Length: 377
Ligand SMILES: [Zn+2]
Ligand SMILES: [Zn+2]
Image 1 (cartoon, protein in one colour):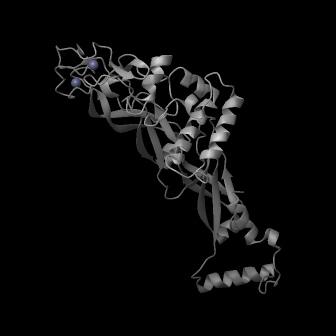
Image 2 (cartoon, rainbow, N blue to C red):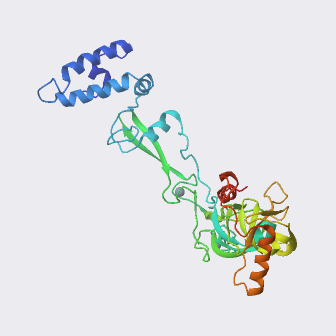
Image 3 (cartoon, helix red, strand yellow):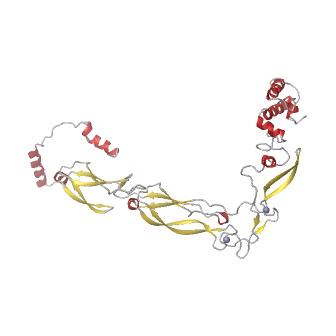
């Protein structure tokens, strides 16, 4: 049976799209598996469908007219079943090399991969920035062959199989006649050269693994998850190719007394009830050293004293966040007789022996404070 799509559809080579459509409809009605009985009807239906698929599409039809069957089985995107070569070969034969197709030898040296290194820092490092030494374990250029992959004193030799072109061509036969196809040379893996005497240190890879110490300036303001790029410090590529980059991923260790929220620091300062009532000055040990914190007379539980500019350095923009000192007023316990007497006297003087059972409005009570604190106010 014919393999010519025009013959299968029974139309002339110069048939119009309308004529092709008409022919297909007639044949499809006749041969449809739901209708047709008899030997070969199903096969013929498939042939007709394939012929129509190609001839109804102007691009595919033009291709077919040039001798290329875009619908042929066995070639992935097309190709000639059984002829032993793929669509790309045919494509190259007719249209020159396809995008990405290999034309000449490929370079032996290729860019290396990026490397990720995790680095744990203290809160102080994040606040002020720091210079740190970081150990990285990556491929580096082989010191013995300097990336040439050859034993010192020897050099690569032109591949005899492909003559240095990195590709081999062969002639295949098809119904189109002789077709030239090309594929990467197996003897040299497409490099065009072979290494007769590989470097003994790197086994001809041009690179070896090495542990190095890098000095890194960590800017103030980095946070857990921040990545710092160290350009060109990553893995050297095969054949001593250019190195990838190193990414330092920061993890900030939690601090014992300070909590970080963005660029601000928060801490809790316990203050005795008497000091909160009378007011006092507390010397606070901050990351910047001792700082005098003013607790005003009548400071309430949960009050916040803001120390401007004692927070975390701001990444990229400069300046620093603030330190929020949360005052935790401590009610005295374990009072002796004298202290009880004093407090009774104080209560008397303030008329607070029997405080009124008056509820605070929600907007000013402890829940409002809690909400404000959660909202970071
Ligand atoms: Zn080497
Ligand atoms: Zn070769």
